[in-house]
Length: 327
Image (tube, rainbow, N blue to C red):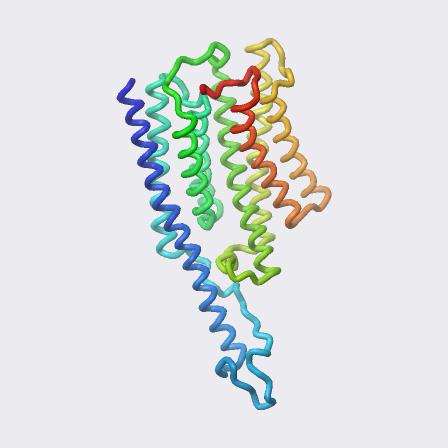
C-alpha cells in the first residue's frame, strides 16, 4: 500500500509539472493571438487609408490618422498556434498522469478515492480537465486552456500542500455505494460548472474589449463572439445543473439511509441547495426573463464561486454531519 501511495504522489507532482508547461504554452498562445490582432489591425488600417502612409494627408488636406478605419477582427486567424497544439497535447499527458494518481490512490485505499478534501480535490480537478478534453469533440474551446490548466495546477498545489492526509479507513457513514454515486456525480457537475465559468469570464472580456477597445485584451478578438460564448456557457451549465440536481437527490437518499432523514439543514446540505438554487435561477432567468449578456455571465460565475466556497470554507470552518475533510 505504501508503494502505491508513493506512486500516486509521484504522479500528482509529475502532472503538476506538465500542467505548468502546458499553462505557459497556452499563455504564449494568447500572447501570439494578441500580436496577430495587432499586426492585422495595422494592415487593415493601411488598407482603409487606401495605401497611404500613416500620418500623411490626402488631396483634401485631411490627415490619414483622422479617417475612420474599419478593422475586421473576424479576419484574424482563430486557429490554434503551434503553442496551443503542443500545450493541448501536454494537457492530455498531464491528465493521464493525473488519472494515474487518482487510480493508484484508490488502489492503495482499496476504495473510491474521494472520502476527504485531498482526495475529492484530486479527483474533481481530474474530472474538470477530463471534461475540458471531452468538450473538444463538441466544440473547440482550447482557448480555455490557460484557465483550465492554471486552475487545476493551483487547486492541486493547494490540496497537496494543505489538505493532504494519509490513507485511512472510511467512517461508517461513508461505507455505502452512494459514496460512489453521489460524489462522482458532484465531481462531474463541478467540472462542467468550471468550464461554464471559464466561458463566462471570456464572454465578459470579449464584451469589455468590444466596448473599450482595451489594448491589453486584444487576444479576445480571436475568440467567438460574446453571444456565442454565452450560448456555450449556458449549454455547459445546463449539463452541470442536471448532474448537480442528481447530486442533491442522491445525497438526500443517502442521508435517509445513513441518518434516518432525507433533510436535516446541515451546513453542507444547505450550501448544496444554495448552489442548486443559483443555477436554477440562472437557467430560469436566461430562459424566461431574458437575462442575457453580462448579467447572465456574472450569475454563472457566482454559481461556480459558491461551489468553490462549499468545498473549501464550508468543509474547513463549518461543523456538521458532513465534516469529512480528514484534517
